[in-house]
Image (cartoon, rainbow, N blue to C red; front, side):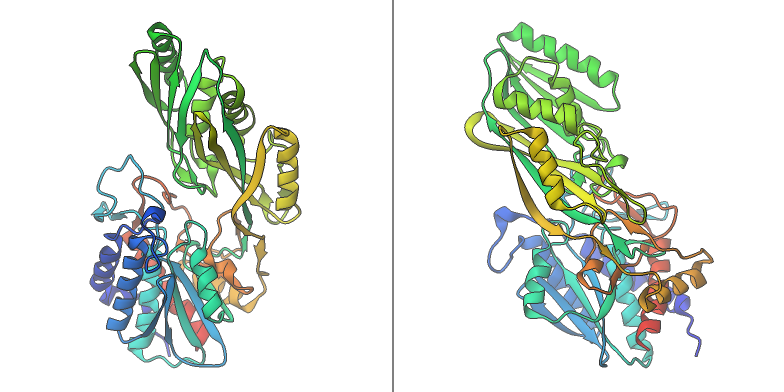
Amino acid sequence: MTIDFKKEVEARKEDLLADLFTLLRIKSEREDDKATKEAPFGPGPVEALEKMLEIAERDGFKTKNVDNYAGHFDYGDGDETLGIFGHLDVVPAGDGWDSDPYEPEIRDGKLYARGSSDDKGPSVAAYYAVKIIKELGLPVSKKIRFVFGTDEESGWGDMDYYFEHEEKPDFGFSPDAYFPIINGEKGNVTMIPHFDGTNGTAYVLVSFEAGLRENMVPGNAVAEVKVADAAAAEKIAADFANYVESNPVSGKAEVSGSTVTLHLDGKAAHGASPQLGTNAGTFLAVFLNNYDFDKGAKAFIENSAKYIHEDVYGKKLGVDFDNEKMGELTMNAGIFSFKDGQDNDNRITLNFRYPKGTSAEEIKAKLDELFGSDVNVTQGGHHMLPHYVPADDPLVATLLDTFEEHTGIKGEEKVIGGGTFGRLLERGVAYGAQFPGFEDTMHQANEYMSVEDILNSAVIYADAIYRLVK
């Protein structure tokens, strides 16, 4: 039996976009200051989860909410279970948008909103693929379990909790990356150098803040500096104007008496591809490193400028490593935080995506040696080991064949630095929804996904899922 999945998706286009718009309007950013027992990551992620499960119930699926950490619905039955893992949380919207990030807009065929490409758009496309299989009454020999997470962009606490209460599917994929397939993902670990908040007298670093998440290249940075007098503050402001003019950044300086506040704008990007961004934190540190700071402030600024600035492959840090199959280690300095005061915990988060052949222990040892005894380096966040599913695995082969037949593009395996829910399963991969040649706007201002790509991915998902479970 030949099924025209393209026709089936087109018939549901308006419904698909309506459901997607509903989800995109929910500000599902993690907010720890608003977290409760009922909302473990804040109210937004819970609202998105409840809405997604409500949509599934509307369409006749049996759903389960696992204590507002995650939820799922099931379809079909069999000895094996295909798992599909999407996520409904998003990174903070940040600044620089041309439209409201939580009021989706279609302009020139592109759907703009936070989460449109990462990961609400792809998740809804995959959801409609399962919905089509159900509504057509296609015979299946395996169970489909579609899991929706709410903390993928932070610590994966949703999946830790979920799998304490639910069994893992046998194999599956996450619609949270690129076509043709992602069957390998680098290891992911964050190292945090800590600095004390001491200062000298000539130049005092009152504060330095940059970045929103460890997996985002900081697009903005702000530093407040106190100097001897107003003339010295005006001199820094003038120097800063020259600096931003001659570098790929923008910014402004505000002088109030002997205090100058510096605002620098770079370019945000996904932390898995830091080479695509312009790190506002390190560019600001390079500027400040021209001045005679002392003690903890000096160490914070100098290390940022000397070892972290434009070092996305870890060469200056001495941790660079390249694996023939998995590629190079990458490093993103995602958050900079410094406040004057001896008791403040000042830190820089360094997020490493590393291939097989090196380890978190080796990375930490080299950082300890480089920074010395005055800087305490700790390991933070959720550590994920490198993950790889062979290209000849039937899961990978089926997904690649489906992609090739629908696009005419040769399907080849690929390893990325990003971490997706595909790695939750031993036989798990990431599959779509971004097509070759797309512009990557994930984690950036003006995030978008073309409506055509959303619909085409739903077609591929429907065909691929059916092939895997029929």
